[in-house]
Amino acid sequence: MIETWIKVLFDLIIIICLVSGTFFIFSSSIGVLRFPDVYTRLHAATKASTLGIAGIMIGAFIFLYFEHGIVSGKLILGLLFVLLTAPVSGHMISRAAHESGVKPWFNNKEQDAYSTYKEKTEQEG
Amino acid sequence: MFCHYIDFIDYILLIRAIVGPTNPDRAVALDAIGINLMAMAGLLAVMLLTTKFNDVILLIGILLFIGTIAIAKYLEKGVIIDRDVD
Image 1: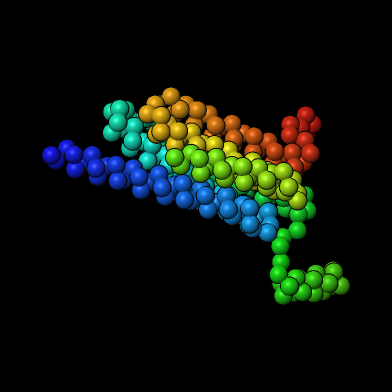
Image 2 (image 1 turned 60 degrees about the horizontal axis):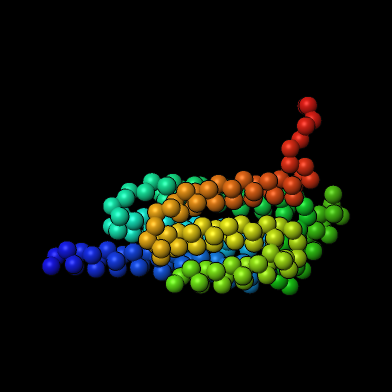
């Protein structure tokens, strides 16, 4: 009797992990579609995807442990690898975009302030 | 079940990878597609009750990191491996 309730509890934990991970990955992809700039797209695609991968890997780890009795270290290793290397790749892509001259996105007020600041610095320098 | 959702948003990200205005946009879309492939492999391992996708997930992560850094160095310098003896 108590084994049935433990199984139900761990199924609930697995379902919560997988659904939250899928939701965060879905939101990151919607952000990559709808943001107006390279840097905001990187912000969406680097932070939310890491959290989504963490949820899905933890859910799969708990599922494999309670279904097959296997402690799979490869899933935790992949999670740690993504968690260490996704900010590095995001920083590399953003630095490449800034070096190759991609302009950041402004609204009108910031655009006017940026253009006046640029004219002032060019006159002074 | 969730694999179908992630498959659908992979096709959404392919639109950004084709119609990105600049080349770093395409690099961002490819990075996001690779992370979605890792998530698809994990959910498929849960769906099919198998343990054979664990190596695949780790391998996709490593190759994605190497490819992203190579693309970023190419966009920044124009050359990935310099042979200049400084």
